[in-house]
Image (cartoon, rainbow, N blue to C red; front, side):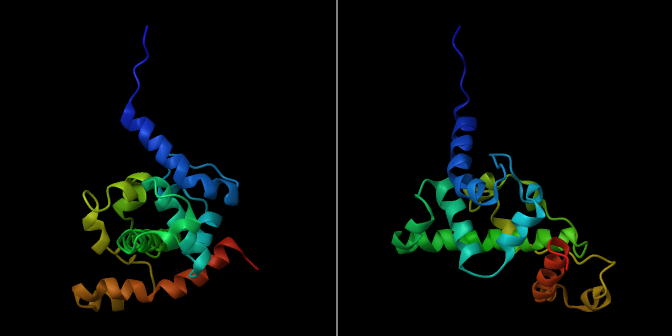
Length: 179
């Protein structure tokens, strides 16, 4: 009897394999088509949320692999419009990763993007998840700056959250690498 193959599932598996190939070697962890931001270990998350070329290249590598654009070093030879699209997606993912770190510190409330497989976030960002680009989490009522946050004009609350990112990076580093 013939075996029925789900082509969509197979395609997602191949995209994930290509996208996470470098991560699997670097982090010695396993990732697949169902890996969500919330599934990443603290050490992987810490590496990805730091500013700098290493974290950017890791995100470019993921996106390029999923989209079938080659591997990380090829990023600089992509057409400018494609390179910009990869960078936009990387910036979106970086935001989501940093918000997840803040979530693990109990500084912010949960976001829907934490629960969506990363392959889907990359593939369907413009068509399906575009509204997520403008989302910032809500500050937790237990955070010491909550009163100031609550008094902030609502359209400026996203900026308020983003201003906490450097402090969150320091706090997350202490969580991951205690002295």
